[in-house]
Image 1 (cartoon, rainbow, N blue to C red):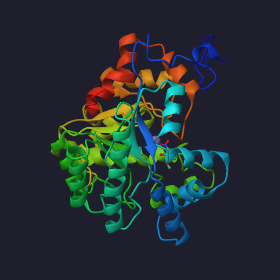
Image 2 (cartoon, rainbow, N blue to C red; image 1 turned 90 degrees about the vertical axis):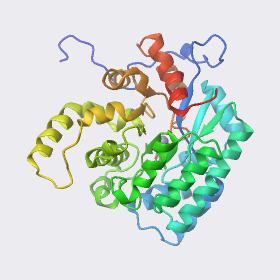
Image 3 (cartoon, helix red, strand yellow; image 1 turned 120 degrees about the vertical axis):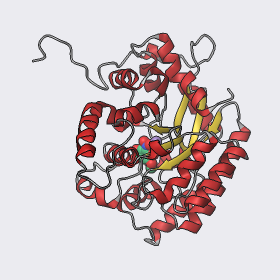
Image 4 (cartoon, protein in one colour; image 1 turned 60 degrees about the horizontal axis):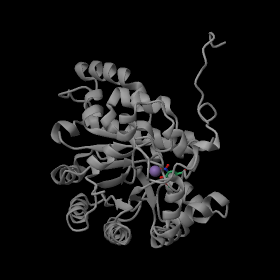
Length: 371
Ligand code: 1DF
Ligand code: MN
């Protein structure tokens, strides 16, 4: 029994009739729609993944499972993903038009170059950023993008971030979570944070499959992917970064988390309580006392997108806990291309100003978009 109250259910609850669809023209709309977690893949990357898989060259259970599927399966889903990841031209633009997406911030699909050798990853990041800059130059009124980098060589990664931002005009950095089972809280990677903070651009900490130490119990029930494992991996990654004291060292640094904060906002109270208790007791060498609480860093050093979640209760909760000015729209194209989800989000029960902040203003400000 629900005590007479109508309980909220995802998917079916706020399904609206198709008359909600079709609000795609910009004229007369109260806001532009800027989508901020939109994946692409140069055909050459797909080829590289196929070769790495055939050679069994990557020591990463998650990569081999995920890209063994996406690169080679003939299922409709995989065909669709491959065709649309590699297109940054007419088909993508027509899908954006169909869904009423005015502008997309593009990022190299997960795990990008992070599974390659250090030399190959460093070289490929440069290639991918040039490829992306070309795509943006062909449609500058529709696309901007984030710079890929290979944190395997943190100093080279920092240089590529600088080139991407200052020479190519890219608007931030994409890191697809773990780097060959290592995490950015390790000080050897901090040149990446230093570059992003100095250039005043955000780092989108996008999911990857869980690292080998984390993935095994997820595999037997298919829970390693975007359904759940991605959030466990990426939520863990951002907590490692916070707990290590990265934001005490880089107080102006901004990260972006998708998927309504990879479920972390719901646990804020307990994170703060237990962090305070554990840090004060000196229980863990790797958990030093910090200047502020975990929720402070999550509120002041992280922006959020709804990517993959077209449901207003968690989005409203995120706005309530993190601030209306920190929550942005993302579709997660082509992994979750859904015109109907745009209508659901248009119909959210939030103030018009908060809706405009969500769809348009926050992304423009954070990524310093010229549109
Ligand atoms: C999936 C989703 C795969 C996302 C991704 O990278 C990815 C998926 C290979 O649905 O399997 O980036 N995503 O961001 O939601
Ligand atoms: Mn994504």
